Amino acid sequence: MSENHIDILIGKALSGNATPGELAELKELKKQSQEYTEAYTQSQKIWQHAESWISKGDIQQDKIKTQGEINKNLFRQIRRSKRLLSIYKLAAILAFPIALAISLLLMKQNQEDVLLVSTTTEITAPTGHIAKCKLPDGTEVWINSGSTITYDASGFGSDTREVSLNGEAYFEVFKDRQKTFFVRTPLADVKVTGTSFNVKAHSDSQSFETVLSEGSVELDLKRQGQELLKMEPGERVIYEKAQGKVLVQQVDPELFSSWRNGEIIFKDATLNDLANELERIYGVRFRFEDPNMAGYRFRGMFSYSNNLIDALEKIKVTAQVDYYIENKEVWLKKRN
Amino acid sequence: MLPKLKKTINTNSSSEVDPFYWNEENFSKVFDEYYSSLCFFSNKYLEDMDLARSLVQEVFVDLWTKRENIALKYSVKSYLYTAVKNRSIDYLRTVRKNVKLSAVGDCQLETPFRDALEEAELNDRINKSINELPEKCREVFVLCRFEGLKYSQIAEKLNISVKTVEMQMGIALKKMREKLSDIQLVKLLLCIFSKKK
Image (cartoon, rainbow over the protein chains, first blue to last red):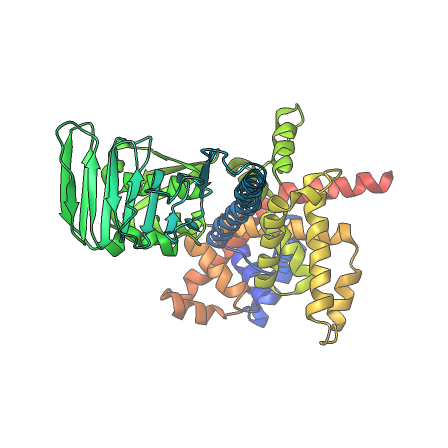
């Protein structure tokens, strides 16, 4: 009799594969040895209590799923609290011009000859949100996440219309040939009469760029000996201050103003560009495990209504990278 | 919501580490330790393993996202089992309201909590020992025990001889016995000990 003969018999008996002869043999063996009886009883217990099976793979899958769900919910909570914050911001934004209007009205009633006080109005789009506003002249401005526009509320539209910008905004300027419209940024000014265009000039970067959708604008780059630069629709002008370079490209303007509709389209962008944008939208920091990754090429489209996890999943699929979140920082790493 | 986050950090910095403090490591530890056992536990009530699995996942998600409502006066283990039990019974009451609870279901609801918990832990130990079996061995055992296939059917399905199936089944049972014997012994001892008390 081979060493595992008893195990084979037990297996057959428990699973109902034993012949009557084999059952009788097992019974006989059990009678002969205490050890065999124990082996049978224990095996029987295992057989009975193995009522269902979850494989290792299933458990691992469930774990990843649960983890993803928790991450998603935690981010949703952070966003929710941000949204509340943005309501307060909106209230603050509204309160200021109203207070201003009332005080101006009162001042006017008291003394007709009072000088108009120079007062600035500032509008900032909270991180993760796009703000749209109408200036006193009817010009519509879309302000991208985290960007700010400032204008002098009292003097706006008296001779010229002037708006300062830090960040990115899209302008649909109301046509008024008498009063020139200026967008002022540290590196360049845009001079317009009536037209639609996108301007990107973050104060923390050394570059300025604008894309003209329709009409015409003139750029006043703030460097010596530079004449006004006239732009045609569909043109993109990039000014890199550090290199003193001005680049003019023919582009599809839609790509550069898609963020207005809560979408951002990337076409042949680097992973670094992408990380910068997502940092602005979601207010998180991105890090690369390997600095070389910053140069990876990427194309795709994101929606502002997506949450961070959706966006990361998209990158994961398209750019062949993996991510993990640690201490509110998103780490991107090469896929092995 | 923000104060809650602060509170979390505070608890963590104190000497007593909050077991539900959210980070991957913490989550991983609790999940690995209790997940499958909780599934078996929930399955005692629901008698549907897929359902039990998604229910236990929900408990984990709630644990980490709605944690402000959780008073940590329980141990992690008793909290988890209680939460899974309550949710399983709630599920039976609401979703299956119209369907008459089967006789078995009624009986299961009556099963004392402790017994069900211990039974689930035993199921889980067995599950782990199945997962630790060599691949061929596990395949044969799973087909036989959980899909109810006859030896001849397994042999045909896996393209092996019936003799091999017999051998593998024998090895599977032997290996699992070896894995479990000490645990059962400890359990038996505990039982006697508590009875003496």
